[in-house]
Length: 97
Image (tube, rainbow, N blue to C red):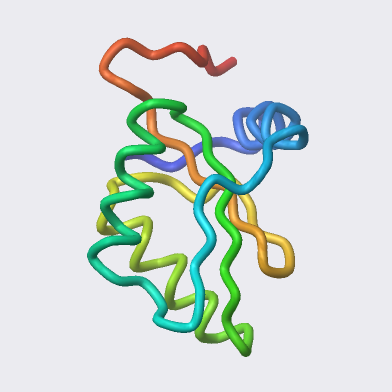
């Protein structure tokens, strides 16, 4: 997926504010099961929030990059242990500005 422009990111960030994390990544890290769960969730919702319980910032960044590449999604933003991912569905529900 192509990158989002700042206006689109701001719009999606506003939509994501009220969301709860649908996937929580624990000590095992990004496994095939986690990728499958994220893939199913993002297919259904288009915009999801994920909690990444990693010890340091660098490992969280690596996990975020692997999620983006494995699910063909775009990182909207990340703050602390929370990351928000977006990928338009086959019949998009969210229309970007």
